Image (cartoon, rainbow, N blue to C red):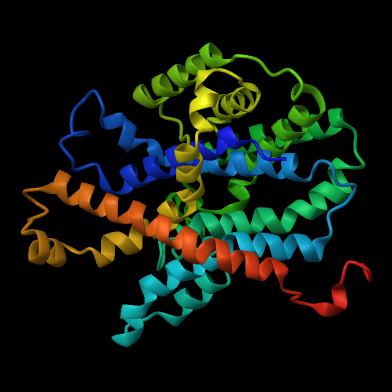
Length: 358
């Protein structure tokens, strides 16, 4: 089961994160009315994690059990080819210059950098979230086969909500009052997988309620969606001392995801259009290729080919790189991400573990 209107939200979230990383110096956002849109848009990584938890339930809820080999192959095919391409694009120059840190390369190739203090942002910076996502993917078959299929919905609900609350308390306490000599700094904790697990689980819970209780209640929720978006804007415009980056905004993201999934109004019609769905499809590339683009389309090349000085023409430099990013993401999606992923899905990686033998 695929909910098309959610696909475009991935594009909006990915672009928001690109803006967070690179658009802060643009005159467009360098004002008190719009600066919050880029200053706090890193929270949309949290949206990705919650949405991932939701769509995993929606995708697998009709199965009695997840076949771990088939599941692992499909998940690997979905995320790893483009993830690896991003690593190559960021590592090739340091390798040629004999400046590569092989520990960083090892951690990134095996998607474990987010577990190690001061290593989460090595090589291709956005890859830290794929390291976290890989942890969720490894955990999900156990959750689905052992927990969600065998334990009552009430127990699951209470457990996940309590875990979410505890995660918020622990995270806020450790960030606002760092523990002396603790191996993880507050900055490291932003990327630590266990402190993001609550987001994936709360997405799972929303997905369970959606498929069992809500999915037949589809109607026009345009006004409700706009209401949630207004609350989200207010939360970002007038932030508190609390950190939003590890699931705090689930109170808004979960209703937004569910309402969009049930909506039949104008917003859904727009989000399900071919162009919006395609932009959503290339969002993974937009997210993972942003750093390679900004590195390869360097200040030197902007000066050489466009006669642009980034300090003087920041917005134009940003727009050129952003267009390159969109085009590159589309090319990678069409000619690399999809065909390589499909080939992996059709390949029997471990012939012994065929469906018949499991």
